[in-house]
Image (cartoon, rainbow, N blue to C red):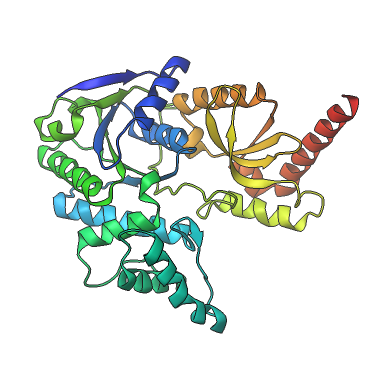
Length: 356
């Protein structure tokens, strides 16, 4: 076993962890060992936000190789359903109207002609299932083919899969090591197995521990209460509210109904900072250089995320942006108050511009 990188929760290691994530080759599986699985997943979610799609898959106890493979493919299907109708970097017709029915064969033919490896039969069946609200898993298709097709729909060049397995049993560790290797080989995605640091020397995971990393974080809840498990996460579609975020969907509805705010803000946009970094921000008014970030405890409630948020705010600030952070609870429980804060920030920015 060889662990090449050890990361702590400090500013310099944030940059090193970024490089470790960025430099992982496509089609490879690596291990990330940690003292806090939940916080490590949250850190990965934060670091990968500006780097494409991420699916985080928490594993339950007792699963072996075949069951882990099935769970991974199911997670890809859940991710593809969440992103529907935004597949292959384009938007599919998503209704059952007569005109849409007529357009579907041409849509499928265009994808097959331009996207190498896409199977027409699979896409026809999978898109029909997604359009009806079901997981795009096609019957009688080999599990490896199913994985490849789902990864293509999700854009495998940018796809990362984080598999959280807080296990110490050798047979289960062997299963997760083999399954993550298998998924990376079948799909071309970058796959990271998030494991306990206590198993870093276990021979069952030698196959994925080479060029792995250790991320040491601390549970941020001062009460010592265990963190809630991280659910499957799908990264946002640029320009639209996150398909799985009740908070973003709620805010999008309110903004759409506000004549003064509707033309200003865009969801999930990539911003380049003065430091050369890229960040996907939740909401941005580009002309006024105002950013609104929506924070939930599940991904921001640990020391690593705390440090990362402040580094991100610093880089956005020196790039000329004002940043307003709102909690998820604030949006859901008192949306009117949250909107008032956004309007206050707009008035403040406009007053600054008038003085200049």
